[in-house]
Length: 375
Ligand SMILES: Cc1ncc(COP(=O)(O)O)c(C=O)c1O
Image (cartoon, rainbow, N blue to C red):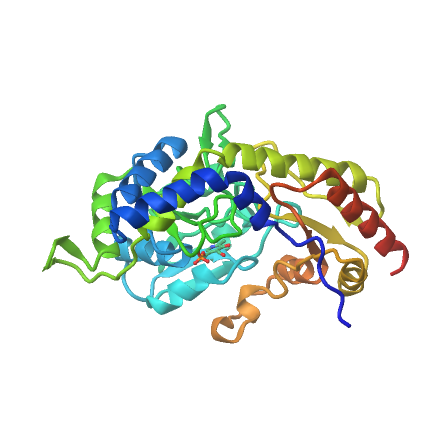
């Protein structure tokens, strides 16, 4: 019989049970009001999230991939423009660029932070470059100050993909601290259930401090309408369900507490693994905090054998990501990404989330350590 995971990557049921009275009440309210699309909870969630982020405009939408689509559509760049983005990431940025007729240009990543390698921006620049989409991967910010400076120097847009790092904080060289998602012209995020702030279905959001862009984003997300049946630009249907907004409004109040729980798990792992040869624990540079959407190790040991050993003891693990983006058929390109290639062979993410017990954490630590001795 195949082994089953007794410790999953994330225990969403335990989190729901903890918040059940509040979540159930919020859901009931929406069901009774029967205002399922564009109900008042959507506006109030947008306002609460804008306050949390300290940003002017939040436009809720259907998911994080749509959020990227809305952001790119709103900037209305010439078709065929090049968009610089990391090659070690989730597929969504590449997918949306291609879909909208833009050319993603993949950059390699930093071997320690896994985020876009800022040293390579200059080499990637061409006359067609119009935007950079850094991804704040696994829970920590890309190095935004040099990215923003480079973008300003060359007249490029910056869209932050903040799907994995909501709540993280970036520190500029003058000491100014800003939440991820508030630095570029536009930022996007996902509330996919497993995200640090997760809905109970698909949901996402776009954010900006630019009033004109905000208006355009709002219109595009709702069929390009200025008002009902007045369509001024080509849009899409990408609205956040009222139910998801009501659920997210409850969960947003706990986001910082959720992050603290994740950080405590990461701290326990760090303590346990930092001295082990051939195991690189997550590196957190001084310019960012880490909200540990993933806890990702880099191993000199054979990853699949370790995964099998963990699974045999019921412990889940994942490889984010097994291939660089430009190794997937629709996104094949000529960029060489040696760091991304090496990471894809050596990264391993362990379970992390809220509501983990000390016993579970200890089991994961012990099982992981044991698995190294058997490989
Ligand atoms: C970095 C990144 N960008 C975009 C997305 C897309 O979000 P969604 O799944 O909500 O479409 C994800 C989600 O998984 C992601 O991790």
